[in-house]
Amino acid sequence: MVVVSYLIAIALAFACLALPVLLLWYFPLGGQINFVFMRLLLSAFGVVAGLTILWSLVPPKDQHEVNGVRIDLAKEKRLAKEIEAIAGALREPMPSEVYLIGDANAFVSEVDEVKGFGRRRILALGLPLLQILTIKQFRAVLAHEFAHYYAGDTRLGPWVYDARKSLIRVYENLGKNSDILRFLRRWGIVSIIYQLLMSGLRAYWQVFMRITQAISRRQEIRSDELACYVAGSQPLIEGLESIQRCSAVLSPYWNSVVLPVAVNGFQPQLGDGFLRFMHAPQIEKATAEYLAKQESAAKTSPMDTHPPLKTRIHLAQTYNLPTPDSDRQAEETDLPMISLIDDLGALEGSLLKRYLPALAKTDLKPLEWEKAGIEVYVPIWRKKAESVRSLLSTKTVADIPSLVKDPKALPDMVPNPPGKQLNWAQRDAAAMNLLFCAFAVCLLDHDWKVHSQPGTLYLEHGENKVEPGEVISAIKAGKLPTQEWGTYCAQRAIGDWPLASSKVEPAQVAKLSEDAL
Image: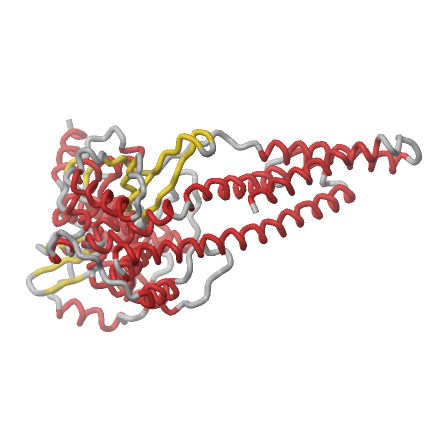
């Protein structure tokens, strides 16, 4: 498929370049002006399209860069020992470089300075998997990845990927990236030839992807089989299920948990936070439902790189291979894989700055997750609540349902971000967030305490617990009717307090004093 792809592209290029020769050499200019103009247009199209295809086949300089931080195995000897054990089981050399990445994934690759010579083997380990998977489960995942080395997939892969990228460049450069061709396509005859050319490329792309992705799925099944022989069927099954669960919620974890903490100048414990996030009740429920859905899906798309989870689990159960004996105690192999990394804090700090380049030169302060509510969220709430103080100056807790239901009151107060115009849905969502902040600050000012963990956030006072965000959502959805609001508050000892905070933070006091001076 790789060879045929390049041959087809080259043949199309020379066919296009032959077009002006055919039209101008064998059929000299003459006759009606319209016919001459048409031949000139087609000739220009042939030259531009042919040269564009040939130029697109020239590979750019390979910039193979892993989006992660490199792990020094000379320092991480316990981790190195596990990797060496799996490499030895398949009689494969150790990777040249091992990286820690933020994805719920692990992968291997080989980078050639010159095709076939000077290969560098790369292994990338996902921090979420290191935290969630036990040692014996991660052995199965590692064995699966080393099986790609063993089967030669990493040597074949770059050729397939290069061919795929070349076809993409041909299609893009002939399409949206070519102003000249866009101009020539304004004439009907050129447009017809162009559409035929692009339709042929699209058809071949479909064939190419279907065949290469089918091969990829077969490679995954073969790697699963070898992983079962090396590490056992059950650890692989458990590892595959955990990968699915992790991948389902990783993006919300980074965006809603890690990002607010990091941009406020703190260095959280990424792996530990993800473990807490995964164990939050609503997250456990969501991931269990997602896993059940994945395990029930038996069909695969021709464009999928991996077989369905159900198929992979069924095959692993069919192999029914035991977990090999280990020199470790059984309880030791049930520890999380991340326990084998000694310098975890430094690696997590580097990974966070890698993912958030704007923080590269920031001296982040260590933060325990239990203190994130006080240190991070409460200051944010107070700042946002202050922005609507004038609107809420006459409002109390009793007015919250009417503010939620009013389609005008709060949304009109939401400013547009610089250079962006919010639509009504975005403005309404921002307004509900402001009301949530005002309600939360109101409770805090009346001696309620914030309880914050990754995936869990609520305020408490004695035995009473309230999640302000859920309260606002329930009112808006009609699940908490307006007429029941008074009873809801009375049951939780929430008074009819003013929504505009009367407290002034120390930083605000300093600012007011400075302004007065």
